[in-house]
Length: 325
Image (tube, rainbow, N blue to C red; front, side):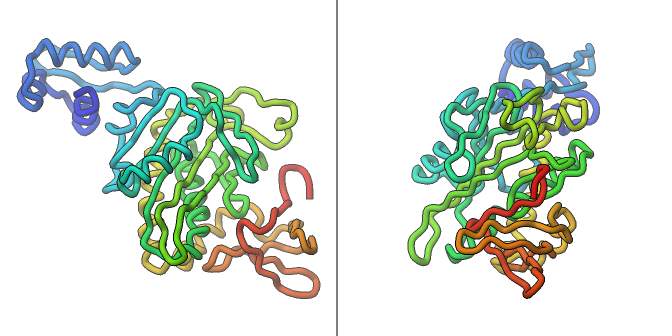
């Protein structure tokens, strides 16, 4: 009932009367009063005025099932949201839920991960109360060969969400890192379960450094957080909601053509590598050139002194920021 009460308070500009809540939920005034007090104890500022009712003044930076569900404004993305105070890995849980027939668009969120993973098996620091650790599970009806482009779709949605909520200039380091002022803020790890011509599910794991005040010595030159870059604290639930809205929109556009043609211009505008020299660490033969943007298949276009080359996501590493070539 707390989720539904929060939703009603958020959707009402004025006051929601206690009697209206009683009638809506078929419960007593005492039950409503208890639920309101539980929300207050959690940190929500709720004004209670006799003969008027209840009004939500402000919400804390809290991540709970009630908060995330009541904050959702999407059509279908995030219709199922599971929240955990602590979990080994949101990607692992999302894959389990996919096997249990949870619907496409299910979101797993945790306040802390004990076994978070980044690309190439690296650990992802997941301290409590500081970041957003979430995994979105989708079941796209598409060719498995096109699934890698979903990573770029997610990167675009995350960058747009962060910019919208924080007003910070979030940019994309191809293919899927989000950086602000040259420092990495977000990592994305996409994993797929598929047959030869059929996708069972795709899980998109996203880690966002929000309130981190410091980083281990080996990360201080490259990593940062929204707090360190802005000096401000943000409600993590607002960033999650903005991401779901943007991803839902971009995902639907992407599925129409199963390529990035309709999203290329927007992605390229946020591409921090664009028209800058990069070093492509191709295991066969590393090379340098100027990054010109992406193709509709998500490949990075790199102009070298001798030719134009297309770099496929997942095959190589691209260097060009974070203080080194």
